[in-house]
Amino acid sequence: MTGWRALLYKEVLRFWKVSFQTVAAPVLTAVLYLLIFGHVLENHVKVYDSISYTAFLVPGLVMMSVLQNAFANSSSSLIQSKIMGNLVFLLLTPLSHWSWFFAYVGSSVARGLVVGSGVFVVTAWFAPPGLVAPLWIVVFAVLGAALLGTLGLIAGLWAEKFDQLAAFQNFVIMPMTFLSGVFYSIHSLPPFWQGVSHLNPFFYMIDGFRFGFFGQSDVSPWLSLTIVGVALAVASALAVHLLRIGYKIRS
Image (cartoon, rainbow, N blue to C red; front, top):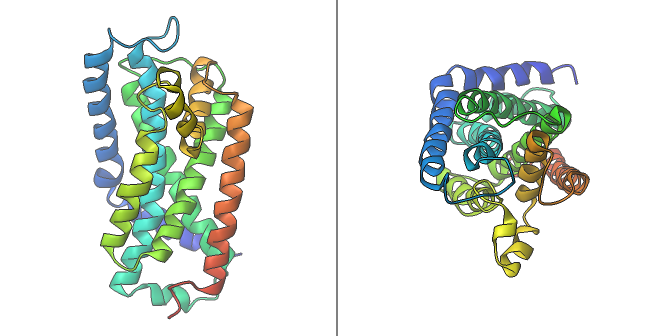
């Protein structure tokens, strides 16, 4: 386990060297979402009493940025290394599969939290959402980033070219993110779509994260914590297994 810190440092340095693209650009995107949706729907949508729609949007946009960037970090790093051929230099090292896992997921958590913090600092200036339970905010941000970093690791191992990775992100990650309650409360949906939303683990990450700001949520934060924790455990077990057998990286 002594070598994972070097790989973690390398992965963090990789995204930080191009922070204008990996950090500043997602922050700008989130601000545009806030300005457009907040301006258009501010006087037409009411989710919680005494909470404006713009303030309601802020935690959702922060968590969405955390999740998307955590996934992008590990998945893009692996697929780039596979296509460019420099993954062989990692395979030559005595790093264990656990070292790979902690380094890639750890750097994804770092990028997700950095981008999320930037989004929060900028968007909170428009509508401060409050901090009712900061511990819940930290817990769901870390768990959510770890889960998406793990999914990005799995996607990066599976994909053999950028097209496959883009398909995974566009047809799996993006829809699950946008349909998780970022821009609305699921109680505003018809009963059928409320049931469908409860099958989406991303919903529990965002709902639990939002609870830390307002003390209100669509489901119990303990239920959200349990589901997110189980999803992370399952995804981590799969990712570690794929790394252990060298799935699509040793042949």
